[in-house]
Length: 248
Image 1 (cartoon, rainbow, N blue to C red):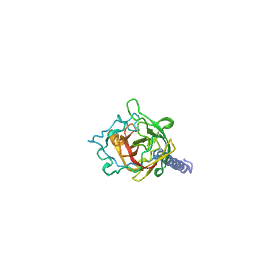
Image 2: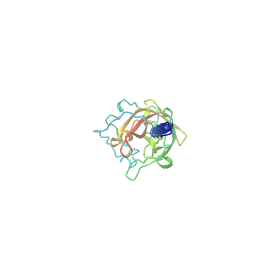
Image 3: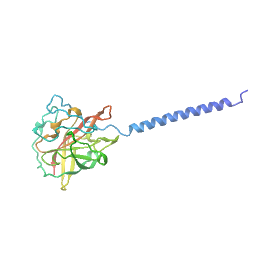
Image 4: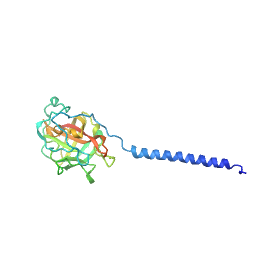
């Protein structure tokens, strides 16, 4: 004969087990959300294409984080790629170019950037190297381009994320026309630039001439990664910000 009350005790154990199971599932779901939801997608400017233009694309860099350009030196030809900033609307510069002086820091108040800048060069295959190691979350000035404020386009790059976390240029795609960029220089001066265009390009259609080509006055190009990820976890696009010197 079954002792009185045993079924109730068994039922209580079953209810407790079910409740614990539900709690465990909720806990697992919250853990997954925390792991995947810590980093939101960075802002993305409009996607453009240079297909069919003379401003041909270049291969992706070895780590997939920055554009690789086989000929990164500034061109002597005017940039006229498809869907690039409309150079016909650009007016002659009103601010005189500065003397050569390497950048030391960059500040973009609208997106909360205030970081050190260091020089970076090219790899063995002529690709623009990417910041890494202790300098991974800093901004890097391409030392083959003019210094910020000099005549021509100065190029500064930075990671959008590094090892899964937001990096120096995570919010770069959120810049809009009129935003200011301050670059401190080794000689103690500050070059202030104003954004006049921003866009995202497939990495195999990187706008080489628009980035490195001759300009009417001192300009700045900021570059990071953007777009979706490929199967190796590398971004498929590059975000490029175009700005011109307005104050020094």
